Amino acid sequence: MNKDFFMVIFYILVTIIIFKFSLYINKKIKFTILNPVLLSAILIIIILKFFNIPYSQYNQGGKIIASALGPIVVVLAVPLYKNRYNLMKNFIPIMGGVIVSIITSLISVLLLCKIFKIDHVILLSLLSKSITTPMAVESTKLLGGNEAITVAAVVITGLMGAAVAPLIIKYGKIKNNIAKGIGIGASSHAVGTTKAIEMNEEVGAASGLAMGVTGLATIIAIIIFS
Amino acid sequence: MNKKIIKILIQVSIIYIIYFIGNFISNLIENIVVIPGNIIGMILLLVLLTTNVLKLSMIEETANFMLKYMGFFFVPLTVGLMESYKLIENNIIQLMVILFISCIVVMFFTGKATDMLISYKEKKK
Image 1 (cartoon, one colour):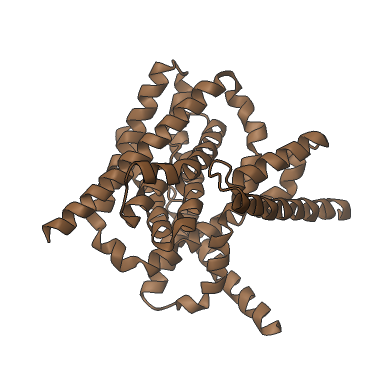
Image 2 (cartoon, rainbow over the protein chains, first blue to last red):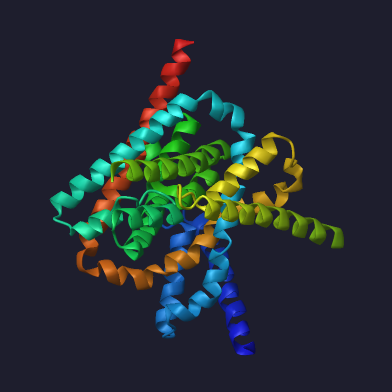
């Protein structure tokens, strides 16, 4: 028991140190693709591979860190609260944006999977890739896809979203802070929201809101149409 | 120093209690609609703040800290890709292309649509 406990603490500490280091690197080289989350994960994977440590062992500590993800989503209510007047004022544009996100997500996945001749089960597992993990898993269950593939797709989508967000906003000429946040949150859920919060509080608030609303709307749409 | 630790502990407890209540409600309504406990917790916290039952100052420091380092908590899940990628190994390149294009398309059209709707609304005034 003592040895296990020590290992748990050890893996948590390693993750903290590597994340701190990644934040530092990210500040030094302004290269958005290599966001701190991705950089940390790559470094940890390299270390685990190098010392031949299985993921399940690392995850003893990892799952304790990940268990805080629930309360973190709860705390997203804080930026939402601070920006509530501005968000309420734009209720209709926000809902419009969310509807656009669900339609574009559905069409793009269906179309691209058709082009690349992707297996039907994988297609079903990708449909909910833009929404937050627990909701995505439920959607995939309802659709009859593979849950593990969904989790992988959700994480990859989040990382991609966080990486491309500044470029999409710049070259897409998206000017309004709320619109930026809705775009990020609706496409790349909580991982994207970490980037949105970095931009500023209003973008973060809108992103957190979009994440919740898009997830709910997706599940409701699936229940209705399937 | 001690006071500060107690304060943080209280703040963390409040956040976790709201999260647990969210999970509890989520389980209750599971058969009707699936809403994750964390999303219900988020709605609950928002309601508590807007109705002034809970003052922002009662959780603000901890909330800000958690939001600032939010990315950290996603690291283990991302490390998990070293296992789960095996499932998609066969068409990894196609899937990466699909996810990438789809992500860009969704983000751009959603952001742009919202942007246009907001400026349309403001022009009308």
